[in-house]
Length: 311
Image (cartoon, rainbow, N blue to C red; front, side):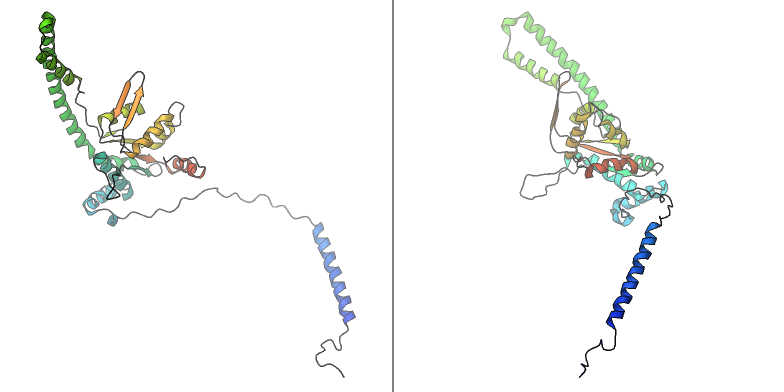
């Protein structure tokens, strides 16, 4: 009896095996012929630009700006035909400059840890993007403050010079009296000479400064000593300042600026020729413009592990 489940009934299995062997041999020969043919050379492909695209930046809208400043900054942006980001960033840095180290934030209520809201900033845009005119229009607000400080310093300096001459004359009078009768020197004369010396040794009135453009790190230390509230270093092109820190002999300048960014600690500069400069509070704002291509080189330092906190 035949098995109803036997599906090979009536099929010659030997014939199927022979046919598969023939087909396999034909496939192998075809492959051999195709392998002998060399591929056609069509040349190098078109090169593609090797660029690292920057992430998209969310646009700043006028509604994000505080109401008291919104109309003023929007007006400048429209008249200068520049993004409102330019004038908004300039305003933040200007406000940080005026406030300086006089205001501090206490992050923890029951703690003595305080932070100075000292700000640095930069406008990143290609040449011709109206960076400088926008910045200058905002920083123009500092001009009346600087003029007022100059007038006040002029009056104080005049008063100081007059008082200085009077003190010197009094000192000379007492000195001559002591020289004439050294045996009769009184305690009153001694005390008065000490008082005059102390008054003469007092520093002359210092000019209140708000910003500087071209300054060495040595002079900047002197200015910070005279302006403990802080001041702004404004560079039209920040690239020049950053490159100056890379020159031989200027390594200390980079460290000085990093220290000045904290804005809440003292600083002492000791030099053989100039002596010592004691800075009560080292606080420096930094602001300017920079081109995107110039900035990329410094951003690459982050990937190479060379970042010291500057970027």
